[in-house]
Structures are given as C-alpha cells and as structure tokens.
Length: 174
Ligand code: S3P
Image (tube, rainbow, N blue to C red; front, side, top):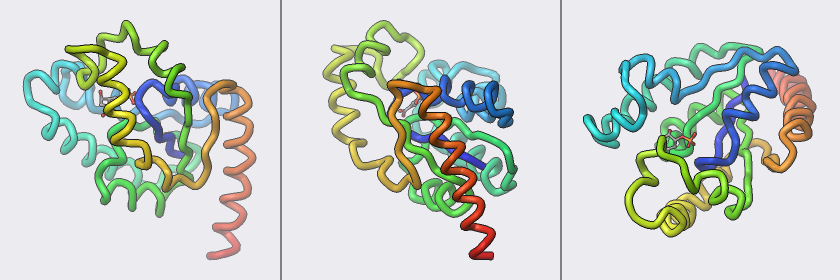
C-alpha cells in the first residue's frame, strides 16, 4: 500500500486520483471513509462531536485499512492523520509513505475560499494556516519519499518508480 501524507491543501486527493486513474491503484480516501462511517461531513463531525472524537475515528479507520496490508492501493490521509505516533508507526511499517509537499503560498491560494476545513474557519485564513503550518512543519518528515505538488503527473511517476524499488527491496529483506 502507498500512503499519501502532507499538509492540508497540498493536493493529496488529486494525486490519489492520478495514481488511481493512470496507474490503476485502488483508492482509499480516509476523510471520505470517516464521513461515510459517521454519515456526516467532516465540518459537521468537528462541530457536533469535536476534534478529539474526529481524531479517534480517523486513527481507528487508518489502523483498520493499513493493517489489512492491501496491495496496489493508495491511501489518501488528512493533514492531521499523522499527528498520532501510533498512526505514524503503522504507516511507516506497513506502507510506502509519500509526503506530498506544496509551497505555503500555493496552499494559501488554494484554501483561501475553502469552507470545508473546520480547522481553518473563523479569523484570518492566512494567519490560521501559517500557525498550523508552523506547528506541523516537521510532522511529515518521516515519509519514505517526498514529492512536489507542482506537477502531479510527474509526482505520480516518481512515486510509481519508487514503489517498484520499495517492493523489490522489501522482497530482498524478506
Ligand atoms: C485536517 C485536514 C483535512 C481533514 C480535517 C482535518 C487537518 O484533510 O482531515 O479537516 O487536521 O489538517 P486535508 O488534508 O485533505 O485538508
């Protein structure tokens, strides 16, 4: 399994779709799975049940998917899904972890009018994002590979190349 991690707005869902459409990976989108399980939008879950409840559900679903060890699959995670040590440990030991990096300016442009991300609502979007970005600056560094979000086709090709190498090495180790 390949897992995509990275800051909110980096383009993880779009990259997941490129990997699925161009290379035939099966796509798992963690946020969508949370919404389906709870039958509520992410914004509603945060508003009605709170962030820690959201993190709990997020951690549990992540654990379920990653421990199954599906091959030929891509797991798209939310920007905060790697904040739990347990989730990081699981991802790095059971999947090929890709950090999708985007310039802060690009992220701000993309999210300026976004209403779907509860952590960014209320107050000045750019400074809220800057604070979150500063806090999470190092959260994604544990990935096996970092790719840039400027060209998602190029990023996908790099990931697939890395994925073959990663599998080859894992087989040698086994
Ligand atoms: C979050 C990011 C969101 C979503 C939720 C919380 C975060 O996903 O999981 O709103 O904590 O950064 P994206 O990374 O797709 O924005």
